[in-house]
Image (cartoon, rainbow, N blue to C red; front, side, top):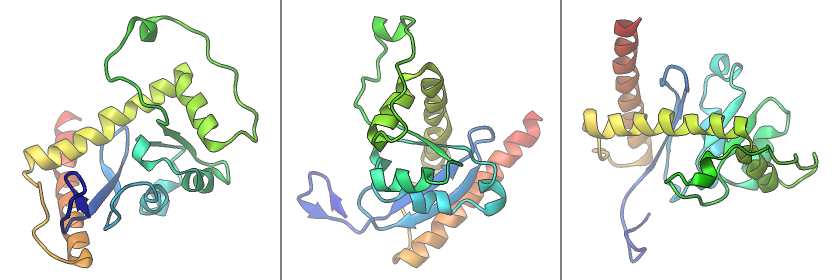
Length: 184
């Protein structure tokens, strides 16, 4: 993969995780050698076991996963709704963000994917749903990196790295299940 400013390449892998918003358990995971996430949303959602996938209604993804083809395919049968940022916004809240405002007029059913995504995040309900992404998947990667100390793969080759990522996510889930048991 290109690294730094793109002037050199490094042997690297792109680790993906699908995380449940309620329990913060990793419900699907995979590794790819793709340098970005543009084509990774559908394959990552596909790693969720059928028993769990049957209950999934919404997929929350950051702007790096936005691909019109991928999102159209996921939403084709109407069982899933994708919430993903398509506009760059500041991480800091402004007075405008705090003001009450009416939800915008919905786009027509045949509107392009990006227009539908933009509309969803402009609604009050859509913003509330999308906010869950920040407190769901980001802490999982933070815990794996900081608390568990996993910052790089030790093995070489995509198949071995995939096995290593499976073990890391399993260890995370065991740790999380222990915490959930103590809390419950």
